[in-house]
Length: 89
Image (cartoon, rainbow, N blue to C red; front, side, top):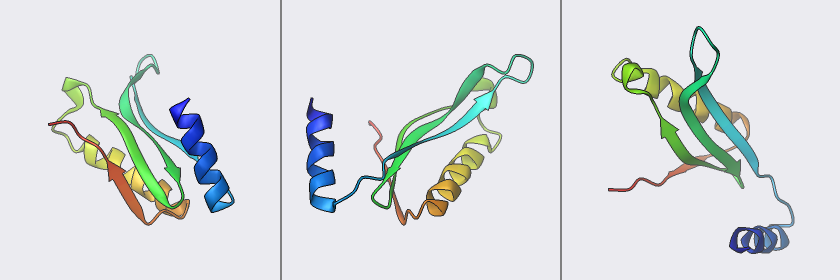
């Protein structure tokens, strides 16, 4: 309800809505199953990163940087000029 109301309000004020999901996925080589990655969305010129996860064996190898770079590249292609990332502490 809250998200729907906010979406309607933003669409009304902006005159359009360009929300698109964005996913950069890591798959298991043998099975093709999703093992981790990044989930987010682009809207109104912003990249929102909602979730990012790497399995323990994939950490420390630069894969996280590659995932972020791929998400940023796609966001720029979509016209985004800034990104938002929420992290708990």
